[in-house]
Image 1: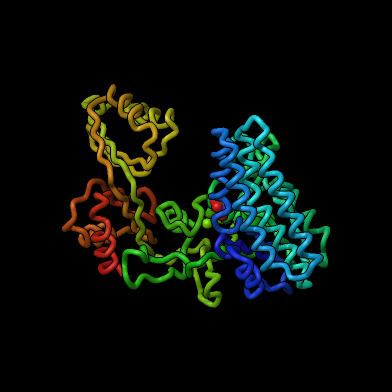
Image 2: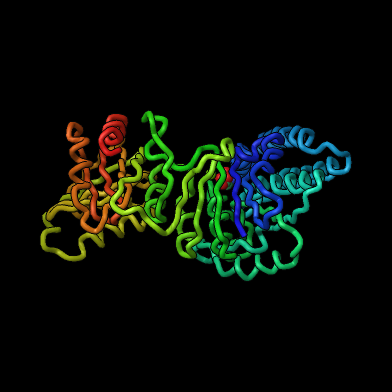
Length: 436
Ligand code: ASP
Ligand code: MG
């Protein structure tokens, strides 16, 4: 059984929803995971923010504006009076709920209930549409099987034990529709897998039911070997290993939610990235196998801050790095790149919320220098057992650009360099023309 996930733009209008059946084959038994219609989750975030600051008038206006959009959607989507009425009922129910928080003391729990409405709406409306055109389908409530534990980690076994019985109840139905993104947390409250989490849902379901394949349908033809907005002649990557995909998903390639690689990798479920606008295009296939000795892709991540801590106390001392890392842990700030010398360590972060506090605490260990506006450029591929020549090729290609940090050998799949963001375009183009 395959799992197909369609993102916000793929369900972004009535017309787009109607076109999904060009891709979904109702003769095949499969689970279809839908995101909220594009823009909806952002709107819901705004609604939550308005309630949070107790701006009831603003919240009411935002809810009304979003409802208007959905009224138009059902007019275009549902042509029979009976199904139209059902669609109307769905909209009335969800928007009444969205309006209801004006009288409450607003809490994060309510905020998450608000965020969940987008996926509940898109799946319910699509399910009614399928009914209208006579395609049998079952709407599966993700909240009945998608669960996170005390550490906010999704529980794959819970999916296996709770989703399989739901599927078994309908041996004659091929098409199962469910919500991406939403889940219940360890307290049983409605929660979510964080922004962009519908990919993660698809991969988790794939793992939970040991699916033959997970397909992520978006609006580009797979992962490209460089940033198509900056470099000409980029190409979709036909095949990636899970390790390579994990490196790329983190480094800005927004096409796949970074965490979604792991459940698929653990249960060896192939993941295909495909293009709704061009369903015949090959896209990118992510599997356990890696093509040996091959550079696959170049990716960049902006907004990086480098921090250098220099201290003679580091020399021959043990425990120094632990103390440095503990500072970042206390401020829940994750570190991306690290390089060390005998008397100094440089590392990078992308979240500068606590930079002031972090700098002050690190100051106790030695002198601290901060460099803002940097970009990590990473080259991903299978560098082979010998790892021979790759670093030289990368550095040769960018020898005319000042490099702040280099990271190589952390895995067999990644070499990263840190440069000033103003050098990014030059670095991406130069690497592209020399490595491919
Ligand atoms: N609708 C959610 C979001 O916009 C989840 C997703 O689309 O993947 O983040
Ligand atoms: Mg997405």
